[in-house]
Image (cartoon, rainbow, N blue to C red; front, side):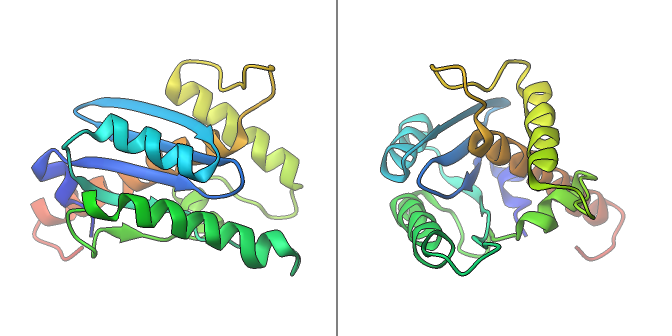
Length: 174
């Protein structure tokens, strides 16, 4: 699962879907990230990729705490729009990761428990800023939480791929 991008030099692309879609691309040892509306986010990713294939595409599975319009319609639509625009660059459909937020956060040691959403978001944002070695802020100075989620999803996906690669080196199944 997904270890192909390590072997082939293809890109790792992660998406945090929404009206403001966070994205992250790892390619040839470099990482880029951003946050924009879905079509512009996909265009930015495609521009960065050029002819490089996507070895692993990770899109956070949209969920919502309430059955509101955003949870039922907007988030899945944004995820589908971005995935559709990136499909031609994807190496293998099997290299698609659709984790729930709690699944990728657990890989990074981020636990929700009884913590409030804002507290979790700040922890994710801090971790992403450390990884990027730069502030993740909009031109107006606001914190870019969707971008931070995409960066941390990339960190989690990379960690999972490293575990798979280690298991293959030691003869165990992924």
